[in-house]
Image 1 (spheres, protein in one colour):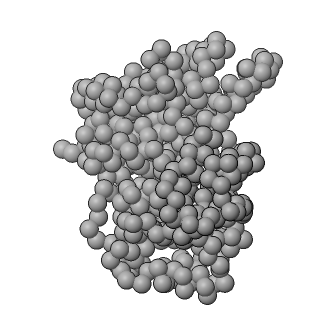
Image 2: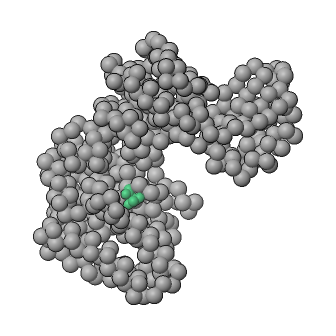
Image 3: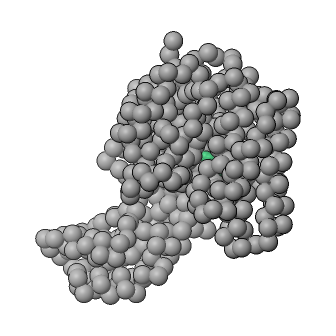
Length: 441
Ligand code: ASP
């Protein structure tokens, strides 16, 4: 039987009724052998995520707030778990665990340890409820001394461990450092754990269950999009998530991508929806829409550099990029003309280094002129179908012209997987809508 690894996000495990839905989903398919839970998320908009509560209690203890204040707040966390256990009708006493965790919080076990307990406790409860084994991530997910994920060691030890369990729950988000302390991935990191477990289990599929029916073709806050993407390649996904389309943690695609395991984004509240399938290669594309999606971000600046005969000056770009490197800065795009080159980078990154950077560029490449402009937004139109369908760029430009949007910068990757357009920030929403309407509506 082929194995599926299923990861459930915090909103899918926020309370007992969600736990029940999750159990139904897992039990509906015996291939769903390994389960990776997040910590309980928000039950209603003003609610607190357990992970946020744990960060907060860590700060309270560090700031030496009174023990009664800490106790009161800790009780709220305890109550979240107790109401899940009671709501499930489970006979499960976790008071010993909760007391031990509190003692550890007082004994400098660290911020990551505090945060990780959200997943740990949720994993214990879920394993008990499902009747699955519990594998503590502390013993199977490893980090290196420099804090990066230790892929080799994890693959070996986790792979061996999974072989001896028919079914198991492995809490997401954390692992262990070589010195034995707990370390977490960055926020939303249970997605990464799910991917790592899928790889180590040699799974046929990694199902990532959340509260939306997949990736939407555009940000629903801007275009009221109701069209989930059926199939998207890892490369397209990278482009869209880099531009701000978030459903899945960016780093979670690497372990499964390398192993050729597809990811299926699914909706816990609508389990019959097929969701979005993320695959390594797709031969076909959605011929109705041509594009796979459109995403974008505000907050970019451009450094414009002009110099006569730049095109024949050997080493010009290298010297320019050296300046960025010396200042520890990365850039997003580098569109160039014959005697001009522009560096597009995040305004936040440029902010404190602006003067220093500009004078270093002056000294190093002696331009005829140099200027900066802020307030740029980037929009990426992404789609593997663009390479085959003629006239896609024309349709994008036409739609933008009709919406009165002025294009400031253009960049079409050589893969023809995307067209990146730089526009003014105030044009961002109209531009997104115009492109969406052109291709989807
Ligand atoms: N609970 C962690 C967070 O809120 C990790 C996760 O949910 O993936 O970031």
